[in-house]
Amino acid sequence: MGYPLVRVDKLHPDGSGRASWYGYRIPDRDGAVRIYAPPATRRIHIAGLWTPRGWLVSAFHPDWRFVPHRWVDGGTTGMYIDVVRSTAVHRDRVEYVDLYLDVSIHEGVVTEKDEELLDRLAAHEAAAVRSTRDDLRARIAGAEGPFSRTRRSGMFPKMPTGFRRSSAAVPVPGTCRARTSAAPRAGRASSGAPPLHPIIVASAGTLRSRRSGRLGRQSIPRVHRTGRRVKPLDSRSAAPA
Image (tube, rainbow, N blue to C red):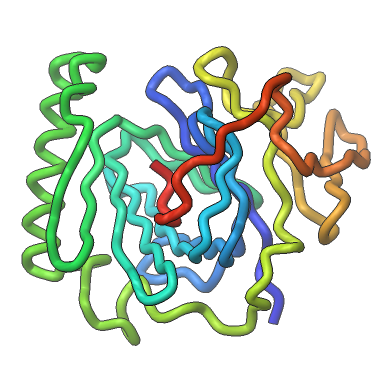
């Protein structure tokens, strides 16, 4: 069985890109779209090109104010949860707006980080983020919803089957610039319609995109080209910070 290859864009509150990667849309669960990124799937991040060793399953639901990611690296596993403003699911792309604060679960310990960055948000939105954080902690403690510990019936089972363990056929998104431009786009239709993003119709090496009613072909970038050497990010976790 084939699974569609889709792009995930993680955005800052101002709409600029923070991270992008491609993954396979595996069967939905409880209304949530699940995207699987195989081991060594490369990500474009504002800090550089990131190639985590492990695999990742992320869950996206338009009604959730959080996006959970379950990562596995060898015998180590954990969960990384972004508190978000919104999540949008398209046929070939998922995007979400990150609101700084993150909650992590590792070896049974729940931690959080970046609460100090909430000063960048309006007071009412910062308060909503803290409320979501409190709700997440309660759900995690009660093993509710996507945080169920039952792997077979839960949101995050064992490694999805039917995939090669290589990520060679997974393309690398275009450059993700540090707060200088909007999320990567394939172009805007001449009619003024919303931007149209790339549609994957081939495996490694080529990417076709539909622009202004035309079907073109472009190369998939193999490196993160910024005019300088890219410093690799920490590859110990598969979660996109």
